[in-house]
Length: 461
Image 1: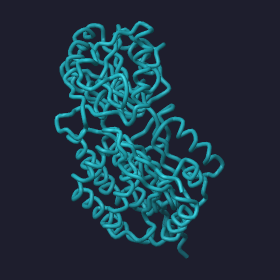
Image 2 (image 1 turned 180 degrees about the horizontal axis):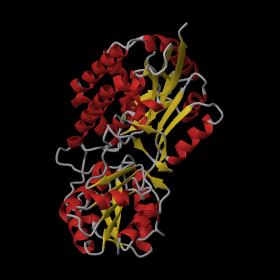
Image 3 (image 1 turned 180 degrees about the vertical axis):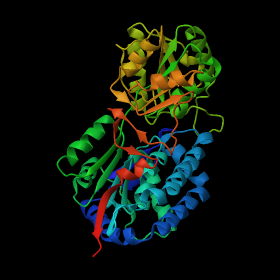
Image 4 (image 1 turned 120 degrees about the vertical axis):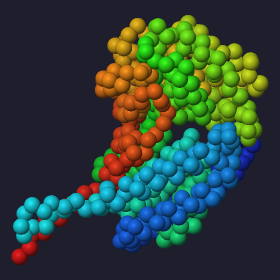
């Protein structure tokens, strides 16, 4: 039996071990999910909402323990992790508040003797494949609306955050869900692919890499099941000529370096109008240099390790390549206390004299680094922002709402921000274009992905 060893990036220690599910266990999970789904569907919507709220109460009551587990599993500083649990509850509450209206039958009463309406039917079993970087926030986007809509859910979490899957199970067990309505599985890639291909699964929600999303899409090809893919990002920010530089620096630096830059919607490239370029860079370097790189369990730490040394080495490689091609690094990593040449710990870095021939400005970094370019005007900025294989979010920093709306209309992205970034509003759909994915979660539109319309045309004799 194959073991999973969860190595903490905080100190390289073995944090916990689990066993991968075998074929028999996976079949039992799928059988239980399929058998109980009609019963769960027939449960009233109000009762399904009440059950989900009980699960949220569990998360609230265990927030401190969950936060400590997140820190050890993926390295986020302890001072920030309780915010993820709070965010989970906030998003879930929004989706619960939207449920009654979005899942109610929609009728047409304009023909005498005819009863016509559309109802939203669940898809059956929803298989959620969740990532480690925001282990609760990414998963809850699908889990709660899927359950409320009458689906059953199977969750496969990243091996780096497998305890999060078990916490979800504890929460829904506490809420009293019937056996099989929510289940988790610790599965390797081969077993996960088999679940994706299984006809008992009606929908697959995947959050992760482009390569992983491509694999899911290929596995499900020809099976006529729905797929939601939230993949990579190389999200740009543009600081216009009229921008408030102080607030722009504050927001963009936080958007680039929070969670050690390990966010699909984090800022990875910045374009600044030439009028503001020097001041912006000077202020950004000063602010980034104030980060406290250190052990994530230390309450003073503001920048923890990356998820592992391999991820940090990729960022080091991007920086070294850019510098070899003429880029200039603005921060001396030796001013940070931890050794920077190896391991998962990596100081924040800002580079200038960058261009789009460099991997740093084209390929996802997923680390604490950002390149900044000077631009002459809005047209140049938009051309550069759209010069990417990705399109998840983009942010515009300006005092002019009309200009932001005009520019936002031509940016190839799923979400346009003005004077903020790296944020999910649960009332708005979370969606990507190009290699950032397909489908959407959150908002009222998120329910459409997890249900199918069923039409009723009833003639009264």
